[in-house]
Each structure stands twice: as C-alpha cells, then as structure tokens.
Image (cartoon, rainbow, N blue to C red; front, side, top):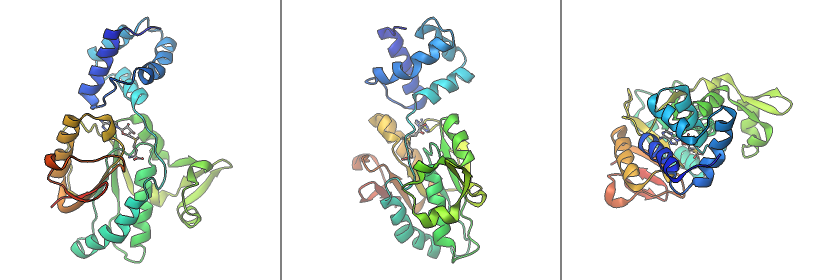
Length: 268
Ligand SMILES: C[S@@+](CC[C@H](N)C(=O)[O-])C[C@H]1O[C@@H](n2cnc3c(N)ncnc32)[C@H](O)[C@@H]1O
C-alpha cells in the first residue's frame, strides 16, 4: 500500500499534535509499522485509517496508532549511573528530610515495559531493607496501553535479566517457566501503573522527590520539550531530582532546573 505525501503529513501532524512525537523524518518507521496492520484490517488507504481515527480519537483504533508508533526499547539497570546516584546521594537526603513522614514519592514518566520502574523499586528495597516503615511505592506511566499491560505482568525472558546481578535475581524474581522469570508480588505491588500522555495536563496528588523521564524527550521537538519540562518542574518538590536519558540535555536558558551533572537535574 502506497502512502502519499499528504497522508504521511496528516498522520505525522496528528501524532505530533496529540502525543508530541515528531516523526516527520521517519517515513520508513511509520510505513514499516503501519502498513501490515492496515492491510490485515482491510483498509484501502492510509487516508481511510487516519480519517477514522480523527473522527473518534478515543477509539480502539487511535489506541492502536499509539501502540504501533511508539518506540519502547528499554532494559533493566539501563543507564545504571542514575540508580547508583539515587542510592548514594538522593535517598540519603530523603531519609534525613522525610524521617517523620517516611514517604518517598517517585515517578517513572515513560515507563515502557516496566524495566525502569522495577529497577527503581529493587533499588529502593535494597536501600530501605534496614530502615523499616517506609512507603516505597512508585508511580509508573506511559502513553501506550500495550507496554503497560506487559509491565503489569512483570514477566521477562531469562535473556532480559542478563544485566541484573544474581543476588537481585535470587531475592526479587521467581521462576515462571523454563524461559521466563517473574518479579515477586512484593515488587510488582510497589508499582502503580497508569496511562498518562505527557502532552496532557499533569496532575498528581503528591509532589515528587524524584522523576525519571528518560529516553522519551528525544522524540519531541524543542518547544514541546520546553513546555513539558516546565510542567514536570511544577510536579516536583524543592530539592527533588530529575533524571533524563544520558544522550538528552535540557537547555539551561529554558529551565529552572539546576544542572547537577550530565542527565541529572535538581529543582531548587
Ligand atoms: C524508549 S522508551 C523509554 C523507556 C525508559 N524510560 C528507558 O529509558 O529505558 C520511550 C517510552 O515513551 C513513551 N512515550 C512516547 N510518547 C509519549 C507521550 N506523549 N506520553 C507518555 N509516554 C510517551 C513510549 O510509549 C515509550 O514506552
């Protein structure tokens, strides 16, 4: 099935406007991910597909578009420096500051298939195991329902656990099948998974001590990124830390976050 210039533009404009994702230079990706789906589902053209979505943006079809066009690559302990920084620098600060409330509020804002939020929870369990009574549940959100459903199960292929230390595997995982392991219920229960489009208003009951927003802003243009970073700033507590992907940067002139070191920022 051929995609015309105007159909490509219509799809990429729609995705940019609603999800912030800039696919203008990703023709091969868009066609590669949509073509089979359209053929299998009896569409005669891309135009028919995008018209249907625009007529009902809350439909199953619109959900499929998001699920097809998002890039969900992730893995356990990705950019491990952040988890070490959290354990060595950030959590000791929270421990001192919140000693009376014993609550730590953490948000993983592009959680994908769960490896990032579960790595955070295992890091928290390690840190707080000698400090009982702390509420260590975290919020994990993503725009894609497919990845969130996968994440909630907490089941991973053995190969996906290769980056995890064997001590963690022993304590936090159990055998699911010969090829798969599952995170124990105590870890799964510590993550609250929700759908959240980062382009929509952000409203949370509590302000966060730590936000992970890693490897998602690469798909956004500067203006979208700037607006999002300001919204995130407002969702955080003074002194809170923001971790972004290690290949990403925030423009210093456009943010109130203080630069700490590459990919780590603090709300002052
Ligand atoms: C490459 S993954 C990053 C996963 C993890 N943070 C990491 O660094 O390994 C990017 C995720 O961002 C999500 N995403 C893309 N646009 C989004 C939006 N507008 N709102 C919320 N999530 C979005 C995608 O669905 C995808 O799961």
